[in-house]
Amino acid sequence: MCAIVGVYGAEDAAKIAYYALFAMQHRGQESTGISSADGKRIHLIKKRGLVTDVFDEETFKLLKGPCAIGHNRYSTAGDDSILDAQPVFAKYKLGEMSVAHNGNLINKNEVREQLIDKGAIFQTGMDTENIIHLVAKSQEEKLEARIKDMLTKIEGAYCLAIQSRKKMFVIRDRFGIRPLSLGKLKNGGWIVASETCAFDLVGAEFVRDIEPGEMLTFEEGKEPYSEQIFEPDYHPCAFEYIYFARPDSIIDGKNVYNTRLEMGRQLAKETPADIDLVLPVPDSGVAAARGFAEGLGVPFEMGIVRNHYVGRTFIEPTQEIRELKVKLKLSPIKELIAGKRVAIVDDSLVRGTTSKQIVKMLKEAGAKEVHMRIAAPEIKFPCRYGIDTPTKMELISTTNTPEEIAQKMNAESLGFLSIEGLKSSLGSDRTYSLVSFDGNYFAGGNANSPGCSDC
Ligand code: AMP
Image (cartoon, rainbow, N blue to C red; front, side):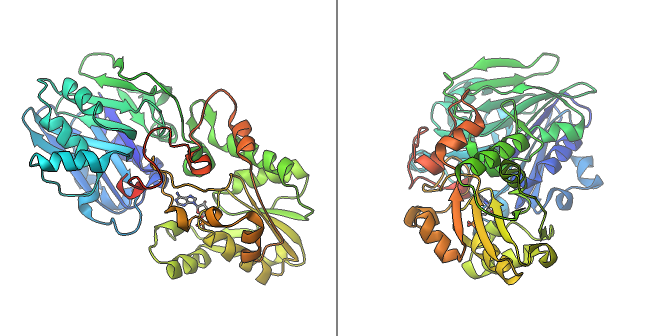
């Protein structure tokens, strides 16, 4: 999860990075940071909190220079240290550097142990610190060569923005697991961001996606220089389309909203239900629920109201708080629901907490029948490439059949999208990362590799 941005060759680089991070707030709400480079120094501000809490006019007086990189951090329970905020800054032999990272390195522990054996000291548990150490310890002369050296030692999912006092380097891992796109700024300069919704806000023109295994170098007075560092083995993450990315973003040429709509239509073909009304779980299930309703020819209503001032339920550590938070967040419109047979559509089922609460809520609101539909396949494996899913045992679909889950939820029925149905909604032009559903850890690691608390 998390969002990164890099801006190069722009007058207000830090402000542009700020707006881009604001547009990508959904990718991480725990902490945010921007570092800027003015040719002589790197300046850094990072803090816990939302983008609008951390930055103001004063902060931009400090964040000078034509290059800025930024980061929004998503984290799971426990990792709330300010030290874990990014970008990560360091002074080293060649001067200063700053790194923003989205993704998850699956060989973090091995690399860290080797570095510690050689005397390295760490301040955080973040895999991003490994990257800084590997660059600093490389025996290559130039930063660019040191970065390439570092890239041969890390494995897993990463999108990186690395800044020196004068240059910026942007890298996407060879699997292209997490999204990263290049845009051109109207008044000159370049922007790289995890999602294209950031370009829309700052008025940048989408140029292209960064290729898997590509490194782009930005240098004063030159066009960005592209180098293919690794042979691509493209596996974009299906979960970005299912849940994580903003519906207005375009990932790999596909609009996220339209893809979700298609997943809903497909779900209607695979698991129809005899119902009067389709409701989405807001906001994550809206597009899929529309597609589901369209597929069945049944009315669609926004029958559950969401309170937008409550954080994502996932962030809370204990089960009791998670359950209370669902109620704080969602509330049914009884007048629409009472006496009806309803289908409720969500994008995914992880622990089952949200769905269980929602079924209860809908029955209390007078629903005659509640049919739960999930616009994704059963999640049976923890993702180790940057999507925050819990351990295998906490995933409800690992130990329960759909019928058993429906019974536990007190729902009349429960239906999932099949893996084949998901693939057909995404299109056959790519091999997607479906690790949460099929357990194919193609980029290395396994169910026990380091989790997303590190991303
Ligand atoms: P659960 O209640 O544990 O079954 O989680 C499912 C809900 O969490 C759905 O409404 C999803 O939109 C949302 N969700 C799915 N994956 C994630 C994730 N990685 N982080 C946060 N929320 C998620």
